[in-house]
Amino acid sequence: MIRLYTFPASLKGTPNPSQFCVKLEAALRLAGVPHELWYEMDPAKGPKGKLPFIEIEGKHIGDSTLILYHLKEKLGVDLDRGLSDLERAQSHVIERMVEERLYWAIVHSRWADNWEVVKAMFFTGLPFPLSLIVPRMARRDMLAALGSQGLGRHTSEEIYDLGARDLATLAMLLGDKPFFFGNEPHLADITVYSALINIIGPDIETPLKEAALSHPNLVLHTERMGELYAARRQRQKITLTLAA
Image (cartoon, one colour):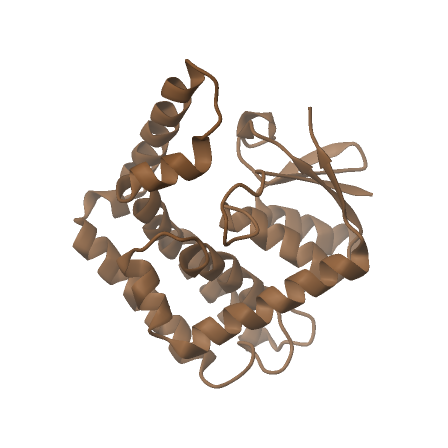
């Protein structure tokens, strides 16, 4: 049995505040891979110092993309089964755009803008003095990462414009299809869903959310994937366990 470690589901409107945690859990559900979900508050416990990570056959593996590579090699889990080589390449490009740039626009929308709203959502309930220390350290680290990545060096207006362009590109690629490559969901759909549900789901108003909502096909895709995500959980009877 695979043990999946993720952040707790602490943000109303999304299955998980981390799009990478959503992505990996959705991938396991849609692929029908039995697993247990363990909540973890300390990313440092993961092999790469981040969440999510999995435990399989006594081994810890980190990074959602590398985890899926491992599951494909060891278990034959291929979320792009049935796609042509060209479609697989297109799926890879979609994944990279969503995770290497759109993700950072989401980070900016939470940790630079709307900080007081996000702090109340993420950190309410921490005892003193952790209630003062933890949010401040978390924000410092996220803003430092945003600056190191490069997007954080732009103005807020420029960041949201770049994010809106990514969303418009996704809307164009999706068109009037139910999923990016036809009538069945693949990894690109899971990746896009994990980002979009974190943009439009939470009660946080941002220019990024406004841009996403301006594309009805992206909204419908998010709803469609959300229904699949919920349905697969019921059939798999996932065990939720709070990690010590």
